[in-house]
Image (tube, rainbow, N blue to C red; front, side, top):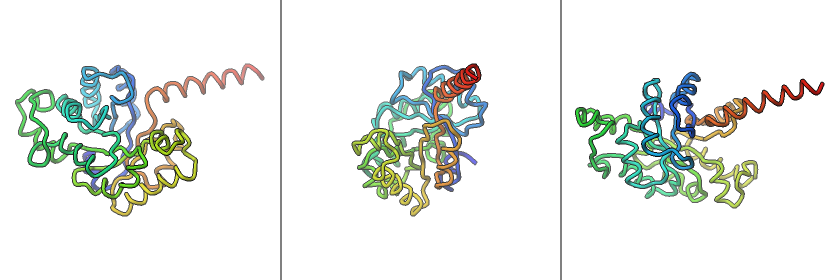
Length: 255
């Protein structure tokens, strides 16, 4: 079952975030059996050429390659798809109109308005018909819910035909409410709950980026009913393990 099928059937799928632009990072992350990895081009220094190498490495390891694009904009979306991404996570989707724009930029006519470019995704023009079918049947478009306006319009967003799922960006959502990083505030939790309930009402994937590398935090979101989950990110897995090890060593030396 491919990723889009799982999203359509609201079946749990777990991936993670790539921020370090080196193929070795992907190869290491691939050993953890993630179903998808998302290359972050919004908040990192990863450029298009590096993204192309990362996409090919992710796919070579039998994992779906998603890209969180820098913004909901035509050129960046079609370029990451032309280099072969299996889908996009689009930031700041705050309305049904925003959602429709993302779909237009990602899908070919008559569904969307994407221009045709013959590059890696279509095997350099030798398999365009096959790629066109892939775009309609397997390409994934995820709306990132990270502003209180998106929460207010959540039902319109998730019922927009062509949106395959959502993922909450907790830092920006809380920041849009004037409380950046304060996830435990009552009003922030209430906003997140509104998204959860709307997704469950319409049987749409409820997604969340769990920043912590603590698996207990991920399990808590699974228990809440999240079905599209990003589990931490590369540098937290690396840094948390190193810090935890050194802390234990220091505690042992101080006995």
